[in-house]
Each structure stands twice: as C-alpha cells, then as structure tokens.
Image 1 (cartoon, rainbow, N blue to C red):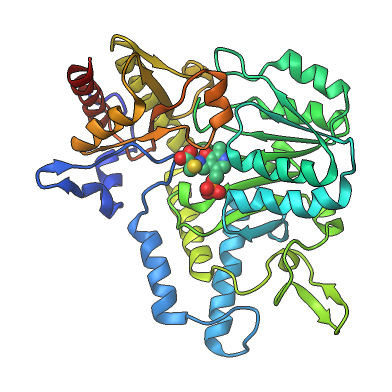
Image 2 (image 1 turned 120 degrees about the horizontal axis):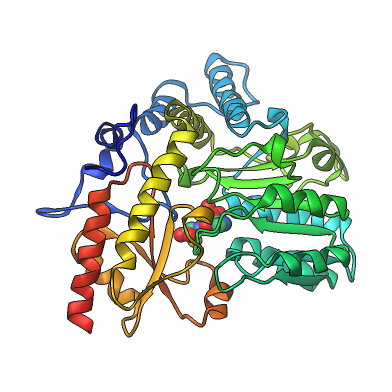
Length: 414
Ligand code: C6P
C-alpha cells in the first residue's frame, strides 16, 4: 500500500502538474527528483503565468500610464498581496521583493546592520546556518568590529538551548537563525526562541528558505522582525525572493540600493526615499518572476500547506525507515519529530560524490557536498554528505529507487 495515500491527495495527479517530473534522464531511465531543497520543480500554472505576462502585458511597472503598464503593475502588486496573505503578514507593504533569501539577508545586514550596530555589539547565529546567513554577518562584523557568536548544535542536530540562554544574558543585538536546516532537516523551535530573544532586547531575523516551502508559516504568531525566503524552492521561479520586515524597522532603515523607483524626489546632491515597499526595490524588478511567485503561492494554497507538510512527514518517515536498514549508512540530524523532508547521509568508506554519481546513473537526483553549510560539516568532521530532499510530489517508489541505488553504490565501492 502507498504509505503516503491520504484522502483528497492524489500524488499521481499532482505529478501531472509538473511537466519535468515525467522526464526520462536517459532513454528508459525516468527521473527521481530528490533535490528540492536546492530548487523545486515548477508546475504548469507557474510557467503559464510568466508566459502570459510576456505574451500579453509585458511593460515596465509603476512608471507608464498606458494600459499594459497598468496591467503589469497590478499583476505585480497583486502577487505581493497574495504572498503576504500566504505568510499571514500584517500588510503587503512589509514585503520587499528581492532576488532570493541571500539578497534578503544581505539587505538587512547592509541597511539595518550598518545603521544600527556599532563596535563590540553581538550578533547571535548558530552552527547550522547556511552560508547565506553567515557570510553577510562576517563581512559586516569585519567592517564594524562586531562580535559573532554561535549557538552550538548538539550531536543529535538540535540547537543547544542552555547555551542559547547563556548567550541571551550577554544581550545580543541580533538573533539570526534558520527556521529549518538544509542539511540536518532540523525544524528549530523558533516561536519560543524568538520570544526569548525579544525579551532580551534582540532584533530577530529568520532564514525561511527551507520552511515557507514545506509547512505553514504564520509571521504574525512567530513575531520575527525579519523573515527571508526564495520563490524557487516553493514551486516558483528563480530570481525572486522576499524580505518580510516589521514596518517600524523598515521605516527607519536607510535604503540598500539606490536608483530608479526607490525615490520620491531627487536633486543633484540629495534624494528623498520612496514609501514602503518601493524604498527597497531599486531599478526595474523581476516582474514576470513576481507574477510567477504569485501563481506559486496560489498553487500551494490550493493544495494547502497543511497537506504539503503532512505528505512530506509521511515520506520522510518512510525514507528514514528504509535508510536505517542499510548497513554502514548514517543519517544526520534529529528523528522525525523535529525533522523536515531533508535526509543527509554518509556511508562509511564511500565518498558522497561517488554515491551521488551512481545514483545519477540510475536517474536519481540528489545533492552531494557541504550544501553551503561548510562549518556544520566541519563540526561533524565530514567533508561532504549526500542529501535526498523531498517535496509533496515525491513518491515512496522514488525512495525505494534511492535505496536500491545506494545498495548499487555499496556493491561497487565496498
Ligand atoms: N540552499 C541547498 O541546496 P537562495 O540561494 O538565496 O535562494 O537560498 C539560500 C539559502 C539560505 N538558507 C538556507 C537554509 C538554504 O537552504 C538556502 C539554499 C540550497 O540547500 C542551495 S545552496
């Protein structure tokens, strides 16, 4: 019996929405796409929404007064509204379109960080952060002589809550954490951690690259000051992401990039910033991509994020169970209770890249390497891991193929 079977969810029907999922990687070798943490596949409705924009209303936005410009502007702003609803943000003006999670975090570091931090201030991160939530702070720390501290990761792949408490007593100015690790799959208890950080006087930023695509996220209950995510990991296009920021903070922050659109008035030696959210959207934005992003959240909403989460949980449980039966294979991170659909593993004596290469020969797409979380791999003394990352469109049969592929790699390299 299909362990993911549940009333109202038909994975075969869902898969038909994604043209690429029916592709053969080589003649007679169907694709098993287990790399959605890197980027997800895209449904026809998203591809069509972008195609329609270019065919029917391509024009620059917020500038022209002609019909096409009006339609394009409306479609762009409408997408912002639907994305705001999707994460329950108080208002769409608090959502800035960026290129991706990385740019969203860089925006905060360069704007808020440079304006409000000073030498000696502490930024609290964790050892499980993606490079996107490490390097911008390292750059800023060098410029401003800031202090970076890191909440340790326990051997089980959880954040050490005692150490977190100790750091809070040292009054960090910023807590910047991932909601879900792209290597361990750990879903961090952010509601509690952000509330504690707030009481300690810290501003909070959440890297939501792996959370918004996979389970319901409610900005209003989470109370994050900043929340960053990318469209391309949630069935949307590449080249567009979001920075949610609390209005009071965004209002007092200086612009990040200067140019057209982000101004109200310009003189030769000075300018006046535009209102939110345009103050942070300099130049012609990724219009088709924003429209595609809107179609992506509509698509996910139709399935419902609760259902997405449920399907991934069942699949992850199945993957953990199957992988646990393979001798000399070690899965990183916590058990299913604290884990999303990311399963990173290593095999004694076989390099992660060799495993991924054998899997590729079987049509199975996984990622191998440090997954842009090199300090975390160093912590666990691993140069690299293989990673299968799941989404609601995956099937138990694909996990079975992964397991067979791993046995094949073992037979070749053992
Ligand atoms: N992780 C992965 O294969 P961008 O590239 O800006 O859309 O997302 C960056 C990012 C930030 N935080 C986390 C937790 C992430 O997982 C990612 C992207 C991909 O794991 C590509 S490196």
